[in-house]
Image (tube, rainbow, N blue to C red; front, side):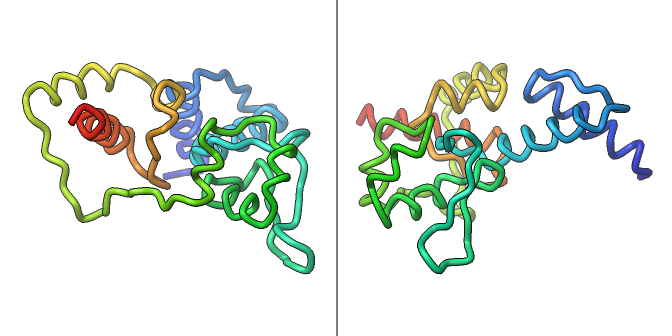
Length: 164
């Protein structure tokens, strides 16, 4: 694939997933698209104020900023000092629980089988954009690099767990 073909694929994904428009001949527009795609791919429920950069702790070479933030990195940052929550413009309501509770993740090799009713729910949810699903179901953990389909499976199984 040539670089122009690669760019077309990326722009198509961007417009479908995030609904944005891109001027492919404008460097600033391309940079903005790349940053938004990175944030979308990171799928973090946290966002720092003013696009700031912070060290995780004094003397640490690792930093945190909106371009690389993940939920796990934000939690690690907050575990050092809970008062840092003031540095965030966006965070989940249950952020304090996230500091102490290990998330129950579905193992990659664990297959989730859905019944007919769940398949109908999945078909309905597939109509939404990934970003809309994340907004609608903020308590469902997205897997880094995971697919929309696997996220929907998590939504359905979490609903079933809460109904039991």
